[in-house]
Length: 329
Image (cartoon, rainbow, N blue to C red; front, side, top):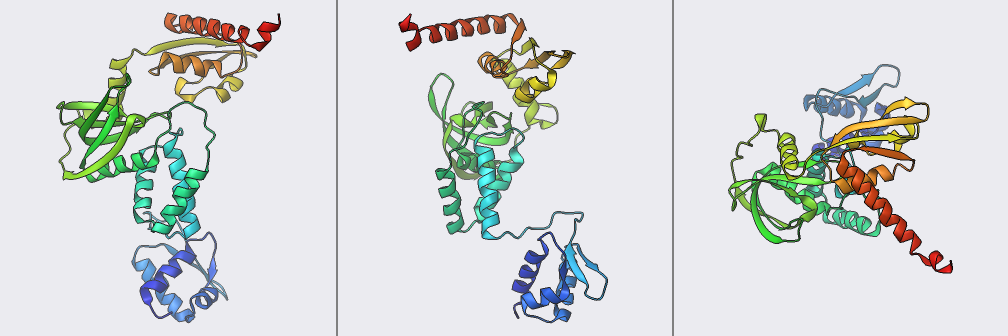
């Protein structure tokens, strides 16, 4: 292989596998002399790749962790696997998958060859994910389109459906994406309303990057913290719920089944625990999450939660008594 750039890329690809390569094996793989391998290793080091050499009769090379993240070389299967994984996590707002994952997905899909983009899309369409139902699913392409405009400081147009079903067209200066673990939100400056707004991404459709660049405005929070702005905007929309619930089950049992967004219960005995936390989520979502713990519990507050659970229990009882089995009485 006489093409030096191509040879260096192939050498780097081999070194990125988690093993040590004898110099003789690298020379054989690349069809060059061991001396050429040594020169190429020096070139990689000059480019900032931390290649470590081992001493001995054979000698070997391996890529080790450095002070900076070097560019990764992925084969077709690795690229598809990463793209599908990022799409699945982003599209279903899996807890722990945040804006960094969406930015990574946007960068990866931008450089994927068309044949690989087709494979990723086909696999995504053929797969039915089993989710916990804590939030609405999102088209990953919508997320990546928004993320690209945030990073590129580019104005964004999209169609939006509000909570009451009202449809509108929006043009915004996107600032940040915020993930709550169950949903994605866009913090942006709405150009028509001349004010900051928070949009639920699962209600966004037809996102379009206009190509018009902008200088980011200063977010009206200390330090321009998008998460703080989002929390404040949510608190204005609905009051926080100060949850107080006793479970008749061990704390580790409840913790394993309770959404981390609601906090962790404190043990009150061998077979009981108590949850005291504050949630900005909806009353309906909190009630559902408590019921899904699958054990006996008593809600002490707030009164709105106690009343909703009572109404929900009555409705479920009526639903079960109205079933086919009730007609046989």
